[in-house]
Image (cartoon, rainbow, N blue to C red; front, top):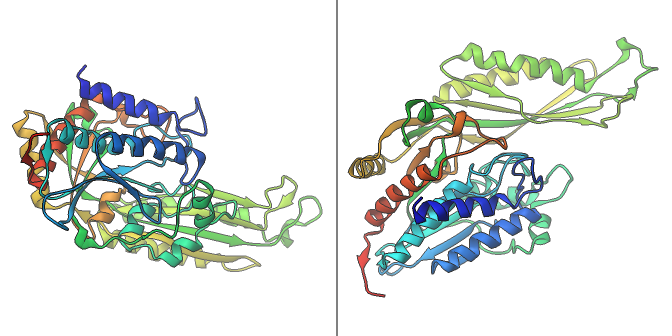
Length: 413
């Protein structure tokens, strides 16, 4: 095992310990105690690699290696460090670790960039606490308005601002970043699917990222006693929600072309075994490689939902996130492929069926993305695993690409 591999495994293992569910996967929600622990580790490593460490008003973390060109835009490299409930150790952190190790290689090889290199660790990509997802990247690029950010709450009614202050973060710090300060963005992520493993190829060069939208649907009915309310006098919010949810997969199937739709969250109020539910809230996630398919399913979703606005039932639909399909920058794609070939590292072109911070940054800068294999194609579970050797290969490619993009100069330390 190389030193690079060993450091990668050490990072992954260390960050994986910051979980609210030890022994049952990684649960690291944004602005939680585990978030605070992980960010402390990340900031310490950034400082160890001689990076200038800062945070913004969302809690995104930046580690900057200054360049020789005054006020030049930065090459960003990184990913997110939050998780889904009971998830794995690699989704997000693998990309943050890759960024840290690229910075470590700059440091070890006495490299000084003309353009700054910035390692970034982003918050709330998963949307597990405050909904919507991609919050850190949407916030820093201005796609999430500050007012909307402040009004977000978790399922306990805690606001983003309250949660930030709870772990010592400063929400008054600058939030939106000027796009003129960003030259490009590189991200490594686990594939979260079976293609690379099936092909026995260690690197996927991402060419496009699927478009996605997420909705929160609220069904309001009337609470009542489970034993004394006749069946024909009920406005049962859960039964209505269940009927709607059962129809949602068919909307994607009818659209075809790889379109998918998922209900991932369901909350029932008042959630008593002997009480007719008065309200249910559930999410709908729709994804497709073509925007017109997403729009068609959205139209069908609204039409279907509105048909249930009757018999004491009220339906409210709130769109929490919308991202168009995104193409990665062709010049960076070519650079990543050429670099892989120069190292004799096999690669293949890929499209991403999952959303990533890269698709948000693609709104404001040139973006490139690499995938590495996921064992058995699984992700968002404790069984999620990727080989440190594959991560190390990706780091070597990203290091070479970052040197090219930052236009490094050899210096004596």
